[in-house]
Length: 420
Image (cartoon, rainbow, N blue to C red; front, side, top):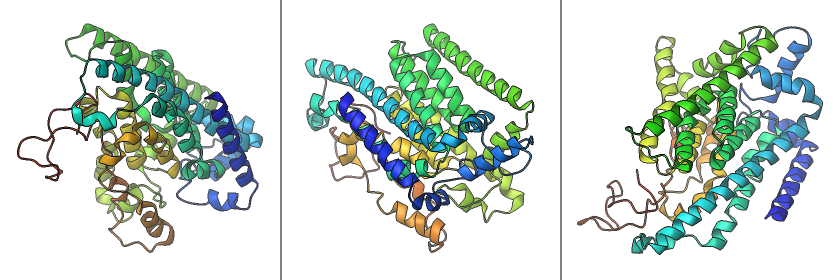
């Protein structure tokens, strides 16, 4: 599969290079859907200008990226287009390798369960063939590289693309079973945008599964490995933060970056929920509701961990989706990462509740043109419901027909996984 992947990478780089040279590049970079107050390229350029003048880039209220990011582009600003194209390519390769390794494990488990006759009769249509699974990693790379959201983020030079790369390498290291590299890349992703902190739980669960350590509170091996992973993660994060301090000789970046993310002072319209809600919020209630909204990103981690502890990669997928919806300054590039995983669970598409095809149009009318009905679109990012592995194809409990109440739970979970 190396040759098809190479062809896909060449085609993706060609498309991006052509758009960089077109008249659309400036128009795309100004779109609020693509760039946020955190990730917009013009703010990075402003920070670089202040740094070149010997002034702290955090002295104003414009630049809110991390110190490592600004020093990276301080040396590579003349090659920014190449950096962003290479970033997308690296993300696609990391996702390809991660899903390839993951599918090997899934196929072995599926084969074993078939031999033991552990599958329910009505889940046969959900069982994937080796040929189907062989092309899933390539589909994931295609979904990422040629997703318009990814292409637009690259052409706009949104730093969201680098966040996606760090998360992709975290996923790759986790799937490969490297606890140290997993902790390092998770620390880098957390340092960059804070919210990937919630990926600690699915990463830990996947590594526990790789180590054949049972997730039981009485297990000493569980607590020992959890402590080791937490120490590696926190230690890596502290090293990165201290390095940032030595680069700037100042702690100004902490309130300028993380304080800005958490307090949400800039209400520029975007594809998220914060700006719409707080644009009409009385200042007296602002702090309370900021805390409530921020808790949303972290709140779902515990129930998802309980329900999906046997499916940690799907847990990662769900958590990345939650981050892209509930983070304070999202862009379409955040959604591009979790959308790339859809081919992995394409066999569950028949279980989805409704198609979200009109979502982008309604968001564009509200945020872009100002024509949307006030109060009609704030829930749009939350509308699509994603089925869990094994959410369909099980026998129904007595008294509930297949056309029964969709809100009721079905019978016992099948070997394909649980249902929320």
